[in-house]
Length: 175
Image (cartoon, rainbow, N blue to C red; front, top):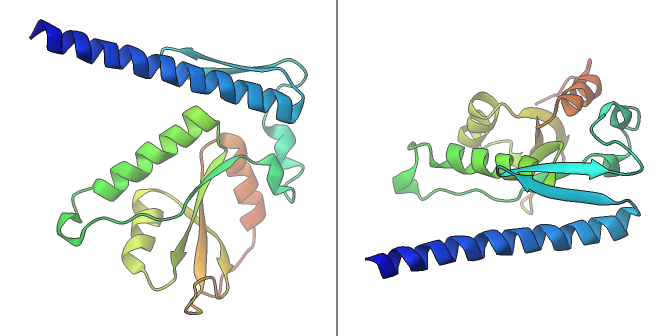
């Protein structure tokens, strides 16, 4: 029994070391990519990002450049499926919330996006009513069969909420 616990603890320590090593490599990539000294450290499973030259904690500067999508970091949900026999158990909601949490904590994302078929009423209901996504746009003929998709977005930071409010101000969708 003690041998089993030792193996379990060793695996946890290996996972922590692996996570720290991946963060270190990511820091190096980000530093090279942005020519900034970005340091990401773990503190009680939360990341702190420190910038030498600019302070990205002040997200207000992003609002001025709302046409430049490169200013907003985001995660995109490409596909989500739950086996028919396991639907209505909250699995999709839990998966989405876990994904959102990781996008925000690990990647410091401003928002999460996804596309949903306009005829997929169950998914649309999940995204709008349960998960609080907002319809941001309509992508005409997005799917191979020619069906339109709703571009759905959910802000993960206060500054992106302001951006969405500004972008959607007086916008009317025909669907």
